Image (cartoon, rainbow, N blue to C red):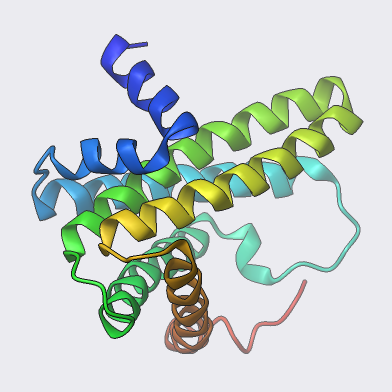
Length: 192
């Protein structure tokens, strides 16, 4: 792994706001960031598809889980809606950040999240209970990192404002996902 990248990963895990500042000062263009978001969505869709195909679950799952393109559209759509939701909610809660900063931090977080998911899958195959504990630890630590990212990106004065932004954005994602599913015709398909 590139030493600069490894250092950024370590900084993200130890001091997320410092990592956020490093990422935001890179000055990545909007085209680069949106392309990176699409690539992360493709990887996440492929990963979810493989997980569902190999898990052998007997639980009913929505039909779109068996369609990689539909998974990609849903994941990418959710990320786009969430980025905009966080940005506008951040402004409403007194923030002064930029959309590009929010986008850059969401992309970086999603890259780390995808790597963590791969690690959880590998550990779960070897030792299922350890995979469960690792999954819980990653979820808690990831939430803390993301709160700090939102605080830094939107220049909020407290982590509590970031929590309010995430809640408001989540409501926007739920509404937006409902509209997205309706538009692409998956709402009526139900479970398989």
